[in-house]
Image (tube, rainbow, N blue to C red; front, side, top):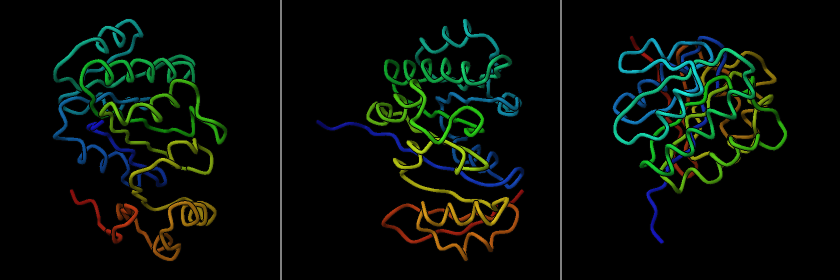
Length: 202
């Protein structure tokens, strides 16, 4: 059975290294986006609708057509993230796929098995046309399910030598290349293809 599969894109890097800017540029032309926005930054991007209540998020998750949603949670982040993931899966499964952006994953996941709704989104979302952009400053402290199922890795400058070593082991990107990154520089690696190096320019 042929399916229009999504992708899992892992984005790594220290604070202010360029992760969110890169992701916004990659997804700018997408017309259906659900963003987990704990820092209230995606909501400020043109075209995004700021959502702060579960009721409104659930209502929008049951709509078809073009939309860009930034969910700004203010209560228990882990509980809110689970709710966001349930809504995102429903939205993608029943209304035509789309892009899901998950910021600051180390705050809402652990190194153990992926939380229930997030795990379902990772394991079952791809074959329903959902592409996931999974963003974290420190993947050694975040969910391994997404990392292990990644379609590609995009690594920005890391905060520590430990982070460089971890990413090198898990992505197979040479540690020397990771360690040499400067602010706004990145390395993109898709298994089976050559490394791509770039820099965000404003």
